Image (cartoon, rainbow, N blue to C red; front, top):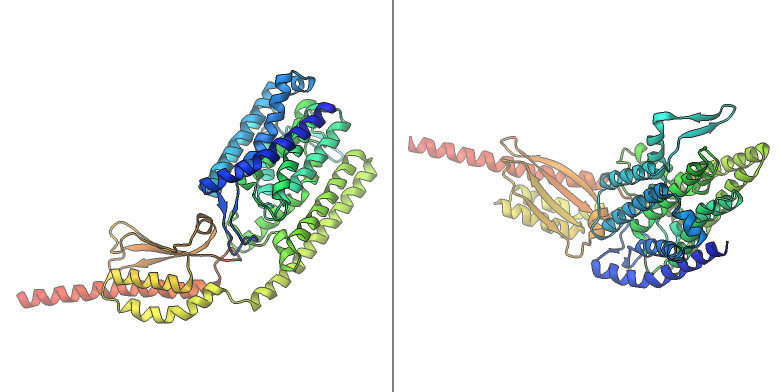
Length: 495
C-alpha cells in the first residue's frame, strides 16, 4: 500500500513539474486552441498537455522497476498484458499528439483507435463472456474481438467528447480511477491498484494547471490516453480472473456513466439532425449548462457531482447484495431519466434562444449577397469572379472560399483564406459546398467555410450561398454561350 501511495505522489509531482515545459513546447509547435464560436474559452490556450500525463504515468513505473519492488514484479510479471497495455496506450497517445499539432480527421483517428484496441485484445485484455440475469455466464465466442474493440474505442471517444470545460475530463477520469482502485483493493488486485493510483496521481498533477482558469488543455493526447487506460484497466480484472467480473465491465461502465451518456446523446442528436456522427457541435451537456447561465466553474462542479453519484452507484453495485444492486440500478435509471428530461427542457430553452439570435454570418450574407449577384453575372472575366468572391467573403466574415474543378472544367483551382484564420478555426468551421456546371456540362465544387456556434450551417446561410453559386454558374454558361455565338458569327463572315 505504501508503494502504491508513493507512485501516486510521484506521478502527481512529475506531471505537475512537466506541464509548464509541455506548455512551452505546445506554443512553439503551434499546438494551441484558438477561441471559436463553438468553444467556451476566449483566448488562445496551448493543448498537448496529455504528454505530461503520459510521462507522469510511466515514470513511477520505471522507478519501481529500477528499485525491484514487489509491485514491480507484479506489474512486469504479466508481460503479455503489460505489453498490450503499453503498446496500445502509446499508440493512442501518439495519435492524439499528432492530432493536437496538425489535426487529423475523425475516421483516421478511429482506425488507429481500433488498432490500439486490437493490441490490447492480443495482449489478453478482452471481453470473453457476459453475465446475464437468470442465465449466468455466457461465452460470446467470436464476438469477443468486436465487443472488446467497441468497449475500448467507445470509452476513448466518450472521454474525448466530454473534454469541453477546464478540468472536466480530468476530474471525471479521476473519479473513474478511484472507483477502479477501491474495487481492486477490495478484491486484492494489486496490479489494478497500482495502475489506478498512478493514473490518478498524474491526473491530479495536471489538474493543478488545467482547472479553471486553465493555462493548458490536455488535448486529444491526454483524453484518448486516459480513455484507453480506463477501458483496458477495467478489462484487466477479467484477464486475471478469467471471468466476467463486475469490475470488468459493469462497475467501470457506471463510473464512466456521464461521458458515455453524453456520447450516446451526441450520436442520437446528430443522427436525428442528419449530420455526420463525428461532426462537432455545441450540444453537449456542459454546453447546455453554460447556455442556461451557469458559470464555467459551477458547470464543472455540477458535472463533478453527477460523476460522484455514478461512482457511488458503481460501488454500491459491487458491494451490495441482489436487492441492493437492484435499488442502485433503479436509482441510476431514475437519474438518467431525470437528466434526459432536463436536457430536453434545455433543448427547448436553447431553441428559443437561438430563434431570438440572428446568425451573424447569415446576417452578413443578407447584406452583401444582393450586391454581389448582379456583379458576378456581369463580370467581364474569371479573375473578376474570384475578386468578387473575395470581397463577399471579407464583408460577410467568412473563413475561406475554395474552388475545386474536375478535369476539363473552365474554373481553375483557387482559394481565398481569411488572414486571421487559425488552424483550429479552419478545422472546426462549418462549410457549404455547391456544384457549378459550365455550358459543356463540366462541374466544379465551390465551397464556403465559416465559424458557427451551432457547429452546423444555418438554412439561411446555405440559401444565400446557393444564390451565389447559381450566379457563378450563370456566368460560366452565359460566357460560353456568348463565345460560341461570337465564333459562329466569325465563321459566317469568313464564309
